[in-house]
Amino acid sequence: MKQFTEEEHVSILADLIAIASVNEGEHEVALYLQKLLAAHDIDSDVIPVDGSTTRSNLFAKIGSGKPTIALSGHMDVVSAGNIDAWTSDPFTLREADGKLYGRGTNDMKAGLLNLVFAMIELKSEGFFNEHEGTIQLMATVGEEVGGAGARQFYQEGYMDDVDALWVTEPSVNDIIYAHKGSMNFRVDSYGEAAHSSLPELGYNAIDKLAEFINTMNERFRSLGRTNDILGDFVINTTVIEGGQQVNSIPESAHIEINARTVPELDNPEVKQIFQELEEAANAGEESQRIKVTCTMDLPSVFTDGASNFIRIMQRVGQEALGYKELPLIASTGVTDAASLLQGKDESFPFAMFGPGETRLAHKVDEYVTKDTYITFTQIVKQVCQQALQEGLH
Ligand SMILES: [Zn+2]
Image 1 (cartoon, rainbow, N blue to C red):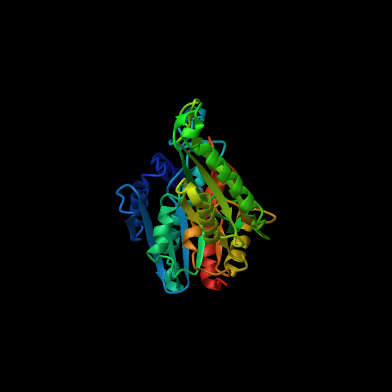
Image 2: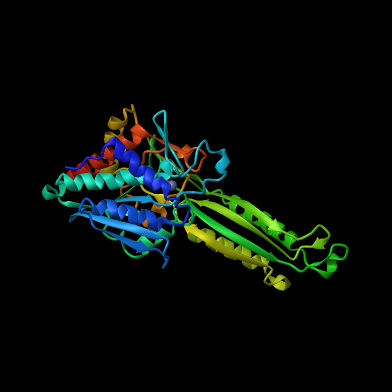
């Protein structure tokens, strides 16, 4: 019977941290995990994403029959940022005061390993010799940038037979069962250069873009759409760039925009409004001055959090972590669930609950607490066992 020791938890995490899968290179992480699973008699598939040789999803399955619980985590990490600001090399795991430091410890290689370890232990204990049900691992690429891995899993039908989804993103203090969607847009403004003393010979791309920004803000914000649980729809221009030099009328400018969507103002409606704004901006002789491109489109996840699966998770998590309570909450952040849960209804059991802390994600000197990380393998194992025994709903 396999049980991962404290040393193994730490050394395997150190191996994964050393693979600097900064929005690329997840293939190497997938190969590492495939080898680990194979050493414990679990077959897995390394699946290239969008035909890439450096980016691959990983899929593995244990057990058989219904129901199916999908366990998901991403293999990419965000950039280390300013390396000099780190106390030590971000890609060399460092242990101090019961904490494990390194880029991706918290978000979310520890959580990903908990899923892998739990599956290996469940299989080796022979749980599936006596119980019906399937557990499938879906390790993804590119979660931090657009979610290409999750999108491909969804498109290729890996979610079709799934009855519950658990993402172990860092959220050790709360169980998240709903989150907003996220969309990015780029708006290009095309003008015509001229000397700034003779603006009538050109066309000011920045002026045109400024008008667009104002109209857009007014249009969206006046709608006042909100969701009781997720909060307000929000939209913001986050990048602006344009012009060449101070005495020339700018011939081009662009902005980037991020919107956080809710079911009351969902992604298709936002797209529709942008199309109308684009058409209005280009009406009449102003033709083709403004071009809107949607560069990211992740819908919101809205489940009711009322399943037995979530209740079990709450009970097991609370006890294992020694908490008085483990609240169920909605979040503003986005996960791979945005792609994976398309087409599922509100009663679908979904949770984001993992060993790290949301506030430490993407930060310098990111860490996961060693005890929590080790405990989480048992949490994943127990929740899966009990959910397959008691039922998901
Ligand atoms: Zn993450």
